[in-house]
Length: 540
Ligand SMILES: *[C@@H]1O[C@H](CO)[C@@H](O)[C@H](O)[C@H]1NC(C)=O
Ligand SMILES: *[C@@H]1O[C@H](CO)[C@@H](O)[C@H](O)[C@H]1NC(C)=O
Ligand SMILES: *[C@@H]1O[C@H](CO)[C@@H](O)[C@H](O)[C@H]1NC(C)=O
Ligand SMILES: *[C@@H]1O[C@H](CO)[C@@H](O)[C@H](O)[C@H]1NC(C)=O
Ligand SMILES: *[C@@H]1O[C@H](CO)[C@@H](O)[C@H](O)[C@H]1NC(C)=O
Ligand SMILES: *[C@@H]1O[C@H](CO)[C@@H](O)[C@H](O)[C@H]1NC(C)=O
Image 1 (tube, rainbow, N blue to C red):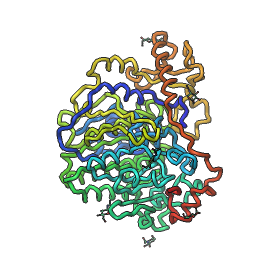
Image 2: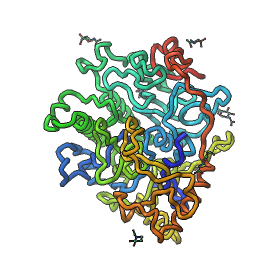
Image 3: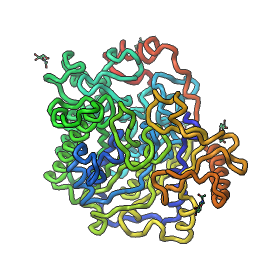
Image 4: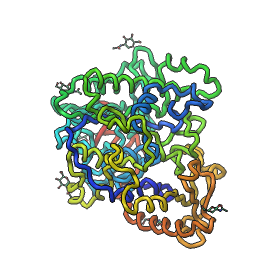
């Protein structure tokens, strides 16, 4: 469980604040929906933001810049500060604390709880693809899954996707597809992390035929770069799609997550970055994925479905800014793993011909969170976002709010009685306890790299010495701690109370004990013996 001091209050409040906006009733036919979830994309690693800045030559993203110019930039899109919580929020429409706020060890499980007793999304929560499939969509997943694979009931095949080509962990090797930090960790080369299924052919298993030549391990000769493999699959899905049916494609590339292993030609392109290899690798990996995003856009256009498509691009969290991370979130403070804006306020945009003309080239400053896509997509598909399967199993309900009325320009974010006032009063991020100034777990133990917000236990008692308070609207770089400011004491009191009540809603099932030695775990042994040496589910 994520400790509460690392809960970002702002993103949870989005749902609460948007609740008064009326539901959207779609008259038009259902759009094709393509979601691109980039991994560890830094706020400033986008030419749209870097133009005019010193690092602009390191940020080669012409296609993402074009999408910004012709689409709607979401300037306050919030996520968790790490992968799984954001991806689980996107898939289920729950705030991360209501689905899985941990980024945990995948090899554990609790046999007493077959619904929630493992990492990732509980089996009886309805995932977005199930809603879209029920609405007639053809549903496909490609790339990083990372929302649970202990049980077959957690895989894309059991979650409403008709086809998938996925890796399960936070990362695999870009060239060998070897599992990294998986169920046999730290013995990375024991397993390959690549799985595919196709409902039409009733296949669902290790992607044995895609396993590369053994000489590919950590080299590039005659090998297929992971993001090329996933992009090729996404392209194939689009090009073979029957345009009379609505398309729902989630493409979650590996870029720009570690291990940064860009194609050699890309690496050479950024030879001028000669003071930090991580930053050079990051720049090269980013440029590569930007090119592939351009290819996917081109596929939609040549297939002649661009005009009826909605394309959403977002990052799963802020960029990793440690020396080995290579990203930049300038001018935001902090990065991945941290609770400042640099960890949680991420790049996002909406584009495609389905976006109303008046919203193209605009910037939306209203708050939106990763979990809000669920109800937004349900509304576009004509589906009720309510999750009765989850409620039967006693699981938390959907938090997601349909943002289409705002995104499409029908309503302004603050148009209804009380919302502006409420939003203004809540336009603060409250940080409790000690929070990280940098992204990097290796640095967690160095207290000089933390901002000490005091003792969280004292934070509910005036004069609130146990908190940090920033007004992220007037002070987007979070430079002034307002916790001691007399005019803010009521804000703090109210937010502190909200944390206490929200804390009571945290979903933290017993996910089982972490095996002492993963290589000897039931999960690892099963994969070696029964899954052809591939990362995958060991439970039915
Ligand atoms: C799934 O299988 C069908 C039937 O063989 C095939 O036409 C389709 O292209 C496959 N889909 C993917 C994404 O591989
Ligand atoms: C495997 O790699 C070697 C060395 O690069 C190459 O000669 C061989 O053709 C490759 N085999 C396959 C099946 O790709
Ligand atoms: C969970 O879902 C399964 C499969 O749909 C169903 O059989 C089971 O009854 C559900 N469990 C609960 C507690 O609702
Ligand atoms: C306290 O907050 C008020 C209102 O936000 C601001 O005008 C004032 O400058 C702050 N005082 C200090 C000492 O920061
Ligand atoms: C949140 O709930 C947990 C578990 O009940 C408890 O240990 C913790 O003290 C609570 N934190 C706050 C700030 O209320
Ligand atoms: C492999 O699968 C079989 C059949 O389900 C099972 O009995 C056996 O325990 C598995 N092997 C390992 C090493 O888990």
